[in-house]
Image (cartoon, rainbow, N blue to C red; front, side, top):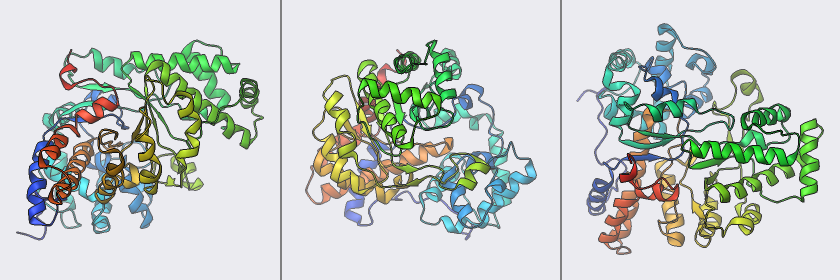
Length: 479
């Protein structure tokens, strides 16, 4: 075999011990062909609505994926040369960006990004070559040829990937027209649901908070000059999303604080925020109160509340000014769930209609805080590893960290959290392989019966996220 030839090994990520690997193979076989349920992600629904061919390999694999371009930037590559912050690249610039990826491909060895992309090259597009400067142009040309074929258009890939449910992430004032059009299109049989993401409308210290709240009020048809009006506007928009298929709301702030203010203080601080005179500490206090309000609304409307806090957004002000958000400069910080969510859980944590999924990038929090919370509150579930710990070893550590406390029924199911459409099957396959590895180890150590592991393998990929996110059974999809 040539040094440039590459086919992913069928036992990748499975245990190296032959006896344990045999058990894992059988468990993985139970999981690998199950449909994909993706209850949290960032794919634009217009991709499926328009169903246009993907433009070129760079716009598909590099430009939208901060997992990929952030590492190249750390090695001195200008993000603009990868298409970030630019319109569609011409053929020359697109090919140049692809060559840059090939030049730096060795730096991705051992990373999830390389694992995912090699899966995509091989399993999705049928390429049998390792990317490097010698093969870059030929691989680019082969991908261009395939992207022009009908079977590689977005809807065809959606079906090929066996995606049954895919959630997007949407602004509260969005009219959700693409979702409505997809739902009305008889030619599209998949299920794509919106997700209510109100973060910036809760950040009372933002300079544009008055403009944002005006837009919220206009979308809801409610006067938002008062705190009560703002609250009614939020209620109306959440119901609008639910009526358009949403099953969850998504929240990402610096901390998951949910301390409530008195009604008088909430009114006063909201008025100050609308006037642009609120202090930083007051803005934080109001944001925590407004997040607690979201929890009360969730108990009313039944949207599952996902919380993934503690990220220093846009760490490089220079890069934010030049390229905007979501280009790889969001850095994790430590988080305290126990104290911050106590007010929320004491308020609505025992309400049978309330449900929350807690995510973290701080691995120590899984066993110390999230698992104990999920192991006692009926409303709390432990979110899967995401972002920087959406990786094989971290997924295995997560299973080991939480399963001793809460087993498997109190976990969220896998979350791909991706903007890179073609990475969805690669990420879900990785998770299934790691679950097979974890369960096989327990069976081999006689800590779990094989029959129990097989039952878990049959439910974790599909049934578990459906139950947590109230998506209904698979046989209800087309009803």
